[in-house]
Image (tube, rainbow, N blue to C red; front, top):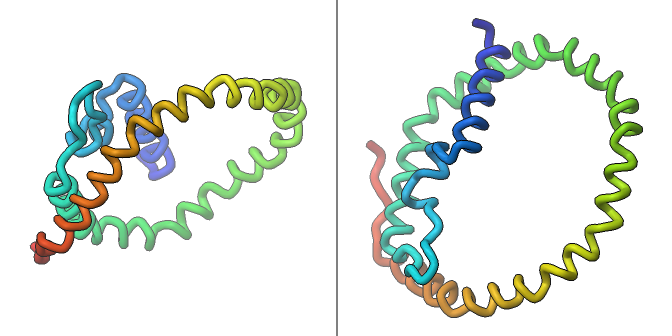
Length: 149
């Protein structure tokens, strides 16, 4: 299977998992939204999650470097498809213009309707976020960074 097909397949799998709610990033406990009335994760939990993510990124470094090395070849392979898409772009933009105008016309009304709810949510979240920020800062100073595996 060539790399472009593989990338497309992985993208479809990820988007399907995301839509189905089974995306591993969304399902990861560090990314879980607290249920209504539930406390935010502690600063220690957030710090540990950050250190774990850093370690995972370090483990992935060789794969990232290989992908970067392959990038020029992949870009060259994709060039005909990109050129074909570029030729179609003006027609697509013309076809989308009415929808875009409608969205632009309704956006101010939608934002105005959402404003009270957004302000209320911000007021409710402010104390918890302030406390979380203080705890997170203290925990970052107290917790040593992980060593390389």
